[in-house]
Length: 139
Figure 1 (tube, rainbow, N blue to C red):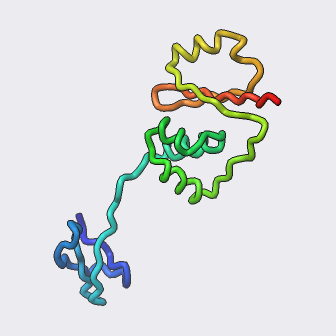
Figure 2 (cartoon, rainbow, N blue to C red):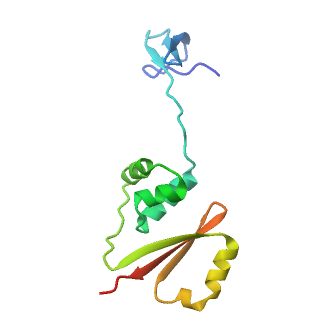
């Protein structure tokens, strides 16, 4: 790995200057600034970010999304804040969801009674499919 540029003066004249907290420390020869390189961290594939935000907009709670995708509900909350997502007010409809493989999905859609009385959305979820259905609250 090449030495990074100094974050203070953008100089490439940096030398290694020890290790702190298991991270390499550098010193800039030009401005004598000491710095470490940021940790890359555990990145989550943008596919899952998009799916989590879609599910949130559809009215599924943070904890339910966590159980479905296996991603921390706190991460989902942070993405909602970061991208300024607002879920629509839902007073008349309640979403329910099922996770089905291809054969189960085809069998479910063959029955015409499953297609009436509610809105439905089907989305890919890895190698399975998620069917979200909205039913109107009964008064």
